[in-house]
Length: 49
Image (cartoon, rainbow, N blue to C red; front, side, top):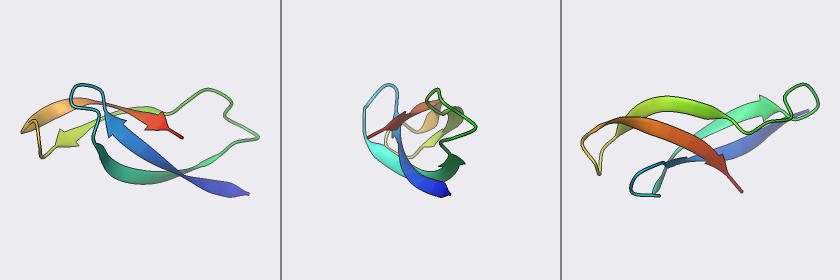
């Protein structure tokens, strides 16, 4: 039931990470603060299609 999703940097829009989430229990998009190696700092990463 868990689906793989990609996380993209909020600033440079590059897809850096993958994560899993249960779409039945969590309807809104995933948002996590993670390190972006392209921006070289911690930024908000959001779920993309």
